[in-house]
Image (cartoon, rainbow, N blue to C red; front, side):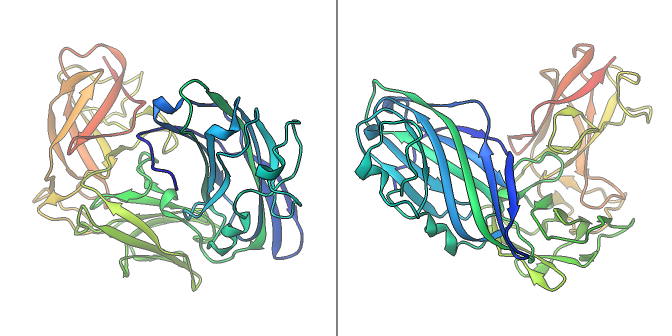
Length: 412
């Protein structure tokens, strides 16, 4: 395995190109990267280029093929590796041949290895890679983010492009819940995959996680079983606020220790998912918006007058707006995951919390658990007198870590 370089160029896109049912429990699906071409830079750039493909289908794999197009003048400069969501790696090419471009399908059933044939004709093949794609058959599932990683670690004169990547996966349909660390994110922002902060509400994204009809927790303390779904964190049932076939929202315990890991596992209808291991960090701040979670847009902010902040109801300068977030970390007095935070005493965030409106520092009057609302943080921010009027960018910091970009509030 090559030494990881300091910079990555990454692209990510999902496209369902085809789906064919072969039998009741067997399926074949094709997914492709269809973003802009990704640059393969010179060796001196110290960069690995990564094309990511999200595979939302959970199959126990029996066959994987990869169709790849690379524009590059000398393939002998390149390492070309494919990684599964579980981190299994298959070497497709490793400094093989001295020809221009790669345009072929890698298939274990092919009669020849690409490095032995060195095809110069576009579209020739299929060929076998340096290592078998059947390496992936031992993985738990096809579900998650696949990555094609390409590095030029030879030439400072040559560069090129990844122009096309697609995967065709055959396997048996999985009925047990499927998720991975890469598909567990902050509920408010949709970011922070693979990490979790004490007290954070996280969304577990996957397949077969809950009932066909989504269920939200009723008012009051959050239950540890909802709609037939239970999620354990380090073996203990976690409070659940929402469950559906493709998403479950749970709160991380406040006693999770930054610098350690937690093991997350979903159980639905007595079927259990593989364990997903998350790194615990001090904070993963995410701001709730009035739009789809994970998408930029206006913050779900309440003006001092009690109105929802909007172009019709902008916040006056010098007034206080309340925004809501997830992932700000430990509070004092200590919180209890799933419990209803009281009005007195208020639990405030232990770490430093700051805010900027339109690039201007804003005074944070309160940052802590929202009274009466389990798993929710509230931040009261004074609108700076020097802030510009109109729609302005809002940034929140907790323990020096920024919230997602593209969040706005409207100033009078």
